[in-house]
Structure formats: C-alpha cells, structure tokens
Amino acid sequence: MGQAPSSTAESNGREIDLRLWSPVIVAGGESMALGNVVAVRDRDLTGDLPDECLAHVFQFLGAGDRKRCSLVCKRWLYVDGQSRHRLSLDAKDEIFPFLTSMFNRFDSVTKLALRCDRKSVSLSDEALAMISVRCLNLTRVKLRGCREITDLGMEEFARNCKNLKKLSVGSCNFGAKGVNAMLEHCKLLEELSVKRLRGIHEAAELIHLPAAAAGSSSSLRSICLKELVNGQVFEPLVATTKTLKTLKIIRCLGDWDRVLQMIGDGKSSLSEIHLERLQVSDIGLSAISKCSNVETLHIVKTPECSNYGLINVAERCKLLRKLHIDGWRTNRIGDEGLLSVAKHCLNLQELVLIGVNATHMSLAAIASNCEKLERLALCGSGTIGDTEIACIARKCGALRKFCIKGCPVSDRGIEALAVGCPNLVKLKVKKCKVVTGEIGDWLREQRRTLVVSMDSDETEAVVVVDGEVETVVEEPRVVQAGGIVAEIGSGNSGGNNGGSRLATIRSKLGFLAGRNLVTCTFRRWSHNDNASSST
Image 1 (tube, one colour):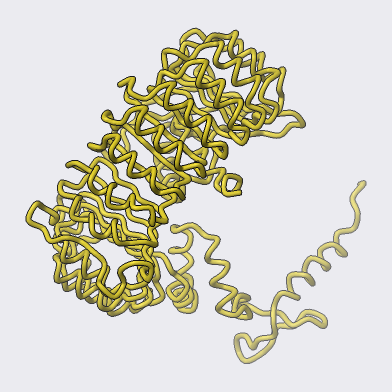
Image 2: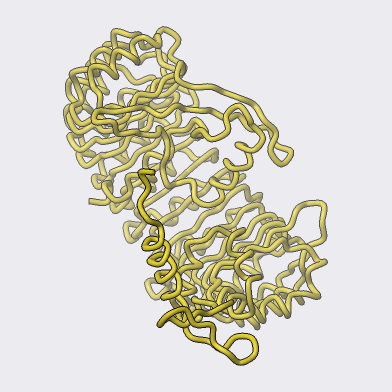
C-alpha cells in the first residue's frame, strides 16, 4: 500500500549494471543473456583503461592502499611498480639479498630514501653500487644512518647517478672524499644537505667544486650544513659557488666569520642565509651585508652579534623581505638595530623577534615605514606591552598574521586589534599571563572572520611516540562568519611525514581521536604564504 511497482526500477538497475559488462563466453562456452543484453562474470573493467590512466589513479592513494592494490593482479602489480617514483627503505643489511628483485620491480624510482637506525648494521658500498646501477634516473637521494657506506661507495654511486639534483646525508661515516666525488660527477646537483657527517674531521681535505665547474657554470643552488665538527672544510665550496642562492649553517662548531668573509666579496648571488647557534660576530654580519641580493636572513642564537652588525645588513641589504632574530635574551640587538631596519628595509614582509627587547620607538618606526609587513611575531620580550600592541594595531594596515608570545600584554592591548589591522586573518596569543580567555571570545565576536588562538583554547597532552616524548596541542576549530570552519594551523607545510606522525599520535590518544592535532608553532606561517611573499 502506497508503494510503486518495483519491476521497472529493478529492471532499470539491472540494465545499468549489465551495461558495465562486456560480452564474454562463460562456463560451457555459452553466453548468459538477459533480454537483449549479454552479461559478463568476473570481468576486470579496468582492463579497458590504459596503464597510464591506472597509474594516475594510483597516485591518489596512500602507501597502504597502494600496496594492497598491487596484490590484486599481475597487471596492477606491474603498473604500480612502473609508476612508483618515490621509495623509502629501511636500509638494514638484511635486505641486501632482496635488492635485485626489489629494483627489478621499482626501476622507475627517481626519489630514494635509505634510513637505518643506530642499533642495526646498514647497507654497505656493494649494496649502494647495486642500487646506483639499477636506478640510473635518480634525482633525489637521502641517506640517514648508513654508517657502512664509505668514500669508495659514494664515488661509485656518483659515477652511475649523474642525473642527481638533490643529496641529503646525515649520520654517515664517509668524509670529504665522498662529498667531492658527488660534486665532481653529479654536475646537475642543485641542493646539498650535510648533517653530522662523521668522516669530516680536522685532517679532512677541503671540499670544493671541480675546476671545470667552478664559478658561474655550477648548478649548485643550496647548501645546508648542520651539526658538523669541522664544517669549515666547506669554505672553498661556499666561496667559489657563484650560483649559490641559499646557505644554511646550523649548530656547527668553530669560528665562521672567515667563511662569511669569503662570500661577502660583492659578487655573491645569495638570497637566503640562515645562521643558528654559531660562533659568528658582527664581522660575519658585516660580510653578509655585502651580499646585496639577500632577501631572507635568520640570525638565531648567535650571542656575539649586536646592533652594529644588524645596522650594516640593513643599510646594504635593502631587498630584505624576511628577517628572523632570536636574541637569546643577550640584549645585544635592540632598538638601534631595528630602527635601521625600519629606515632601510622598506620591502620587509615578515619579521620575527624572539628574546629581543624592542620598545615603542623601534616598533612604531617599523609599523610606519614597512608598509608591506604581513607577518609579525613578538616572543619573549619584557618590553612589549599594551602600548606597543596598540601602535601596531593602529599603523600596520597590511598585517595578516600576528603572534604574541610570552610578553607582558593585557586584555587592553588585545582590544586594540578589534579595530586595527584591517587585513588581519590570524592572531595567536600564547603564554601572556595577564591575557584572559574572555578577551578572545570578545574579539571573535567583534571580528568574525578573524581566527583567534589563545592558551585557553588548547588542550595539551604528553604521549610517547617511537620512544620520544611528544607534547601534543589540540586546537579547536573556529567557526567564522557564514558558517565557514577554519582549522587553526592546518597548513600544508607538514608534508607526508608530519601527517603520518600525527596519525600515530591520534591512535595513542583516544580522548582526542578524530580532532585536529597540531604542534604549537608559528614557523609554518612563512611556508603557507610562499606564494604571496614572492611577489
């Protein structure tokens, strides 16, 4: 009663299903026909798709789903292997017997990562040579903890993988000879990252470009040196590579002023320099100031740097767009240096001040002169209060993202942001003891399109992931005007590794399952805004 006849619907559904099938001979050599439609059984409908289309579909799958798909049939196994361009292996010595069959299947790999933990024996030179012979199209290689690989193994690898563009090594035992072999044979190398390379010691030979590639003919664009005992052996490489755009030196021992003086000859094309926890003084900063093309500069925890060095940089590097300063509470960088930045660096778009006791005088000058300033972070300063925040709110019309952390700011200073900074889209206030949760709710009511993140909005939990203690911060989603939901900190900078790590943490935190978990950091701002900052 009240039901329509089902025969039409059923027949229409049956006909739709049957139209997806192609004629095929079934048991006994007879076709199974229903009306004018011939049915099919056990027909792989993806057989009509070209291998290229099937491979394109596989690219949208995660690692687990892709592995399961490769077990469906021989064709899917073949297509998965031929279209797999990125491969990461647990580089223990036990997998050596399987390398031949593994790379027979994955012979189109262009990006390879070999990682081995400290307690295991890693792959040796022989294994690396076998991989280089079977993967001639490698463009990116990452080696982590491969302590059995020597200079000879790296040289053989370099001879076979001449198309390599990016090399990242860490916690390995080979030395300068291996690095020089890569620079000699991999003429297309663009990025070199070296971390904790144990083979580089005081008696190591200098690392440099081959004579034929020296100067402007080199393709090397980026060098990153981390936690090296004798990183000064890279001085000839840094000094003679005129095509170098990015230089990062982080937590390396020794005096680095001389290295910086070698690059500050007025002919450098460097546009990005990161200095972190180094023995660098104003002499080094003055040398950097001769690199007039610098657009990004990080001076992080370098206690010998002062206002004098920063003034030299500001006066000569007028293209500066991103400036990060961590003064480490030494009070050697303050208003004097920042006033010079405000006067000369009119293209500044991002400014991060940590442990720098800036006052109203310098911040007002920056807010007035740097009209393109879009991202600002003020952290751990005892001199930044309500007056300074009100000044920023009144004068920084282009500001889009603002972080205040560990400063003596009260609700009164936050109130000024209700009418100031008309382009502000994200505000983060952390560890400001006088600021209450009520001001955050009030500000959201006043500016419904503004994403506000405060201490009262978070739930912290401590978990153990892979033997490491992790502090996890859960931030709720904020509803904006029009019903739009914005997730605080949901940027793309984490990458696949960050996503998998958060997935692991979610599985260990039942009470936070299914919610947005992020680590408390403001550094992702610049990654999310690369497109807007490059203009």
